[in-house]
Amino acid sequence: MGVPHAAQAGAAGELWVLGEALVDEFHDGAVPGGAPFNLARSLAALGLAPRFITRINPQDEAGRSLLDSARRYGLDTAAWQLDTAHDSGRVQVLEQGGSHRFEILADVAWDHLQPLAARAPGWVYYGTLIQRQPASRAALRAALKQAAGPRFLDLNLRPGADTPELIAESLMLADWVKVNEDELQRLLALFTPDAPDLGALMARFALRWLVVTRGAQGYQLFDASGRLQAQGGGEPVPHLVDTVGAGDAFTTVLLGALLLGRDVAAALALANRYAAMICGQRGPLPPDPQDLAPWRAALWALPEAAA
Image (cartoon, rainbow, N blue to C red; front, side, top):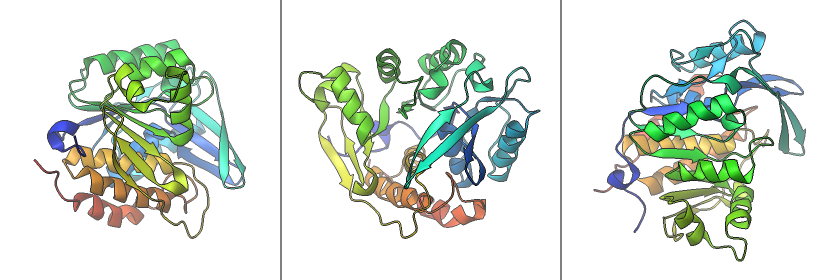
């Protein structure tokens, strides 16, 4: 089957990103974050124009910070829903020797995402955390079922959004899936309990492509039959600060390349380097969007996918 070319991956074009925007509260300060928001801001700074759909309270400090960050990275906020009845999303980041865990504030504005009036015309990116409450779950799934293009799931399991039922339903709606190694092992244990079988997992949910990020061990790409089609080793991180947003950074470059119709093998290698760079930053993005200019040039300079 080989690495996907443009026709297999889906036509380049518009991307809708649906999900949470929140503030990551580190011990030394707050940083705007949330996997969908990280990806949308990065794509905007890299020269693409995703339509990011979320819900915030514009009157609280976190909401104002999120709006300011979107504007600094050139991300359009026209599709944001405003909600003064609920707080904007916040997360306490608890760091432990280079790794981290999250304590996520419950019942916030993005838990109340409302249905969308328009049908998504191209790619749709989504995760699981936005589905933890009924309102936002229903809004997201209605959009996914009407999407005209491929659907990209970044599983990104978090407490409260990691039940077997929610995971299975999310996978059934996806064409592409990105997971880390721990998440892949959990999927195999849940859905192929007798013996780990990646091909059976792919077939059960009719997945087209699976990307596995492996931290310091690099990445792997599997096709619909569970066969390995591409892989790469880890990239050195000379000065590790934290790993927050590294997976989002990887997905950003891969998805950007798919939108542009670029060679996927080359995109995966660039995504790996970009994720390593993010590990040397505090939080999911460099504080100055101009620092991403070389990465923007590298993304757009990727070779076109073979016909």
